[in-house]
Image (tube, rainbow, N blue to C red; front, side):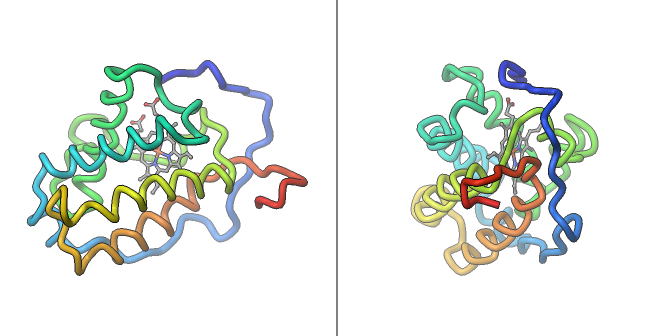
Length: 159
Ligand code: HEM
C-alpha cells in the first residue's frame, strides 16, 4: 500500500444510510468466467485506472499495479459468485476501512466507475462474462462503490 498521499488530518465523510443493500451477483458469472478470467478482467480494469484521473491513488509501475489488481481480483472472485478467495488470503474484507488511507470523493468514484464500465463493456468478448449478467454486475459495483466515498469536496459540485 502506498501511503504517499495519506493525510491523517483530513475530515472523513460518511455516506448517509450506511452500507448499501444491493443484490448479490449471480453465481453464473463466476461459473462462466472462472478465476483466470476474473483476474484478467481486473488487470485490464487496473490498467485503465493507471491512465485515469485517479491514477495517483494507485501503486506505480507494472509489478506493483498488477499486485494490487490481483488482490482486488481475489475479492472480485467472491463478489462474482465464487469462493472466498480474498477472505482466505487476507481476512475480512472491511472494504470501507481498507479504503480509508485514500481520499475518495464522488468525482473519484465516478472516474473509477468509468474505468470499470469500460472494462465491463468488453468483458463478454474478452473475459467470458455472460452478457445477460453485465447489468447485474454494473448495478452491484455502482451501488457498492458509493460506500467507499470517504471525502466530501466543497464547492466543486461533486458531493
Ligand atoms: C465496489 C467498489 C470497490 C471495490 C469492491 C473495491 C475493492 C478493493 C479491494 C478488494 C482492494 C484491496 C484492499 C486491500 O486488501 O488492501 C482495493 C484497494 C484499493 N481501492 Fe478499491 N474497491 C472499490 C472502490 C474503489 C474506489 C471508488 C476507489 C477510488 C476511486 C478505490 C481505490 C482503491 C485503492 C487506491 C486501493 C489500494 C490499492 C493499493 O495500493 O493496493 N476503490 N479495492
